[in-house]
Length: 131
Image 1 (cartoon, rainbow, N blue to C red):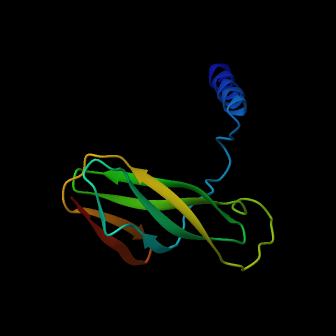
Image 2 (cartoon, one colour):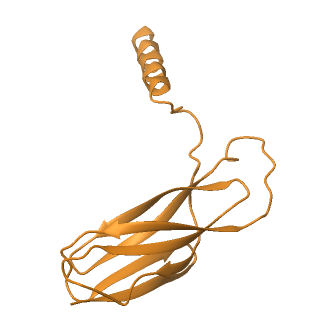
Image 3 (tube, rainbow, N blue to C red):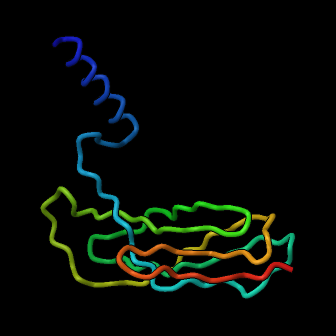
């Protein structure tokens, strides 16, 4: 039992040094993406920048965009944090659109399809022609 307890103390000390609590509830949430903007076409050697309009507000804040990419396309999901999870916080109901860009670097197959998965809604999909 002493060995296990020492291990837990070591985990707690290591986690504290990285600024996270391994015993806290996961505050990650999938955020609603309201809009996907991308150019209709790009040059073959150029990077592709897309802009996601993410809905935040209340106790939800933007964290990151997760991307799975292949040669002919990519799937994106916007993640945030619900800072009220596991805490006794009062949150407002305000919804605020916030733009976040993501750059894809070449090479690209023609056409290149960008898909944004949205929890409980149809995905947003756009196709970019590569010339």
